[in-house]
Image (cartoon, rainbow, N blue to C red; front, side, top):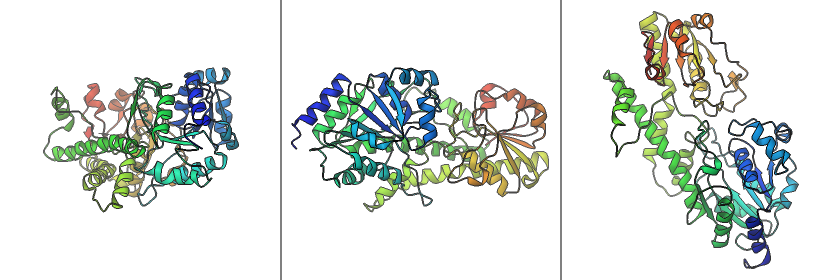
Length: 447
């Protein structure tokens, strides 16, 4: 079929009229906010997920993602603009299919594209002419062309001719109320001019600003660059934290002064390690791909090495502080981790360094517990199954006095730091929250 044929123009007409049916596969932190943004833009949106409990919850107007309130979800469900399903046969009736599935790493720090491949195979079973398929999952340059397209073309249908393929990297900042899907500029690309035009036409109907680039591989590289930039700069201040700390210099004071420069400097802040679904993972997608070209990625790998070492650095500081200040070994200590989520004011624990802190403390022989106002219980994770099911403890004066040390791993606003300052014998602060809030205490050690 020629790209000037009726199905291509029909797709564009449906996008223009906002009658194109849009499928979003994967209803997590990326997929659900996108699906609701699509529905709000006037398109009929169908969310696909393999978990029946999620589907039931969403169709009942109950959201499990902080970025989408239950009220906002219920409005779209009641208006008939959004519904969820686990029946992937319904993909055949959708004009646009957006893939928002996880792209984790294997235990050997290599890309795990099993979710992407399985989803592409599922789409292939229901693929028809005239559909637009867009990958949003973060991945290495070439995935759309080298992985998605061949799987879809095994059907006998061809990209650029029978169906249209694109890539548009997700951009999410959990907990940031200043931005939402519709207000974050969207990088878009297509496999060929027609696909590029269709991708642009669709996304500019959903978001305020689109940023077209020349190829899907370029768009994939954009997303990696954004997160590698953060990883490298966070690694830099983490390393400076250790070096300046040995010199008796407070890295937080240094950063506050440095950011007064109105040009040539952007502040990044140290912490107990990296968390989230992007920054700790995405750089490894590029380092893996670079090996195909026999090119080293020393800078990126060094940054990852530094950031990965931060939980161990925090525990080392904790052990020394317990010994020197309290005359007690970490192996005989009870430690409270404040903040299980990887980022303040969100319930997201993906790749959280707090999980590693708990494990390291207990490897030393200590006892680690946690308090988090957003996380009641540690869910099952691939890397930390041994601590699954542990529950957040109460943050009371009596409870605080029962711990030998408190480690501030995540600086949630909904934590009573004054109570911690008043009742904790030792506080290891990885976020400078006590300095920032002006809560002076002889018990505080920065790490």
